[in-house]
Length: 167
Image (cartoon, rainbow, N blue to C red; front, side, top):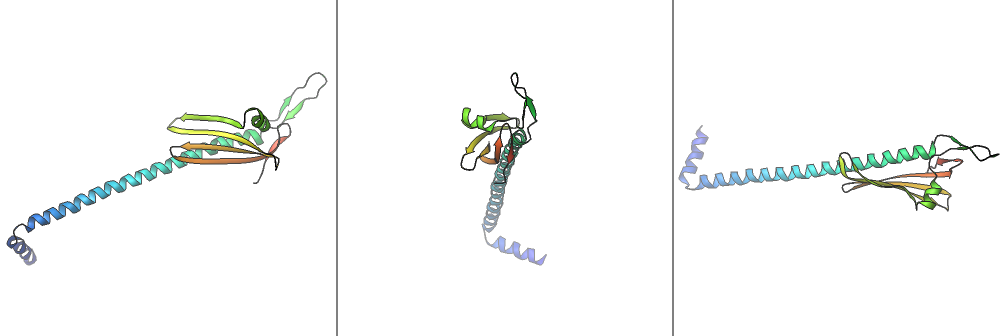
C-alpha cells in the first residue's frame, strides 16, 4: 500500500506522465495484437501448404497404385485366336509399349476438378528406357503449389506380363 502511494505521488507530481504511460501500454498491446495476427496468418498458410502436399501425395499414389495393379497384377484373360489359332493368356491389362508408340507416352491424360480439391490435377506418362529394356511410369499430381511425383519401373511385355523393377 505504501508503495502505491509513492507511485501515485510520482505520477501526480509529474504532469503528463500518466498520459505517456497509458500511450506506451496502448502501443505495447496493439503491437502484441498485430504480431498475434501475423503469426496466426503464417501458421494458417503453413497448414494449407501441408494440406496441399498431403493431397498431392494421396492423389499421385492412388493413381500410381491403381495403374500398377493393372500393369503387374492384371487379370489373366484368354484371347481367342482365329480358326486354328490357340488362345493366348494376357497377363496385363495395360500395354505399355502401345501407350509409348501410339499415344506418345500419355497413359492418363491430365485430369482435374476433384471433389474438395478444385485446384488439383493429375496425369500419368510412360517412357521406354530402351537401354535397360524397361518402362518408366510417372504420375504427376499438382494441388495448389504442391507437386508430387510417383514412379514405377516395369520390365516385360503385354502378353507375358510385367514385373516391377527394384530401381
